Length: 120
Image (cartoon, rainbow, N blue to C red):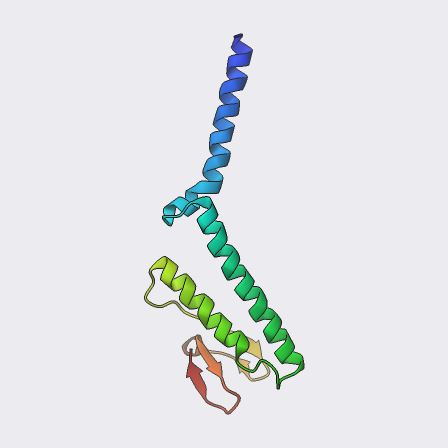
């Protein structure tokens, strides 16, 4: 084997190792294989996608899916919390809307339309 061939072979092996690490390092940190992590992530993504569609339907037709999006959001948060081992994670973020901006104490609260705010 020539010196050039040897260098190319070594460079290819190193490149392959870096690519493999890019796909497996994060799942390994969470005690999962690549496919276990992909499955869990895709399930969360699908739930978020469905929740988003329910929220859009509710925006146009307020009498439909009145609690569906928030129920899905809670389920996603619970799922991610359980996977991470968190006791509690914050849900929500300050939003600007017709009622003005929400304060930091309102983060994680949901308005029920009656003027009160209920903790998620």
